[in-house]
Length: 336
Image 1 (cartoon, rainbow, N blue to C red):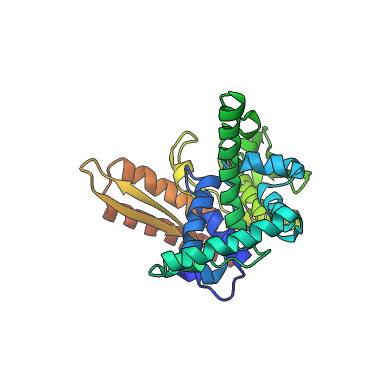
Image 2: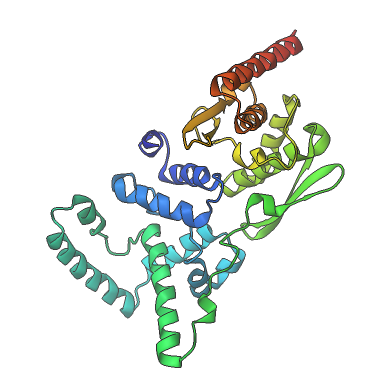
């Protein structure tokens, strides 16, 4: 993903949003994975300043963030982290003055000790009152451990209950926020301090499962910074040109696996196929070839089913290309 990281046309915030979305759109990956991997990228490319002003908040940092900034209970974690960062960097208290003086001494010593490791040296050059969001996020985890240690060693308690991590592993997954009626899929969540309700008409997409997928995409767009108004426009644009067709069963695992990466320059749906003999190979569909994001996902699901039923890659590639051609012919007839 070096092309995205070094893209001069994108701001650090846009890069973070797109990278975070790609990670969290992967099955089994949430806030903590996004935080860990974006921190690794930031360490490798410090000049890009991806995490200077913003950062995903892992599950270990969320409790101390809520403790230090009560407002965070009504704010998204990333917004709460930005607020706390502003307060930390603008503080002029005696403790703050001591902290910045002592930090400069420690980082100077680090520079000498690790002068043969340039990336380490670059990370040890924090300007006074300019702590990065990534550093604050990590320090929140350290603060949580300190509070647990204090509770055990000073008060004889098993832990500090205010620092316990939620079992949910961070914010709910998009699919956990959905409800379905006979006519529509609803999504409701708290976003930037207010309740937001999104709806998707099932008839517009020919399938309740596809409508659910649209609702999840809308939630991802909202969480990545898109306005509610533009999220609705995104839904309407998907409905306008969508042609429903043959699809997999509702209980198929393909619904979880075959999801488009919207942040890719040419959005695609990719997955890995594992054979019984241990061999692996990648497979993908693209939005450009399919003509529509939801069609690319549907074709990918159908291919996933065939591949996991034992069909050869060559046979499924022919099947995929035939579906591409069929979709192209349908769109051409509609224009005529």
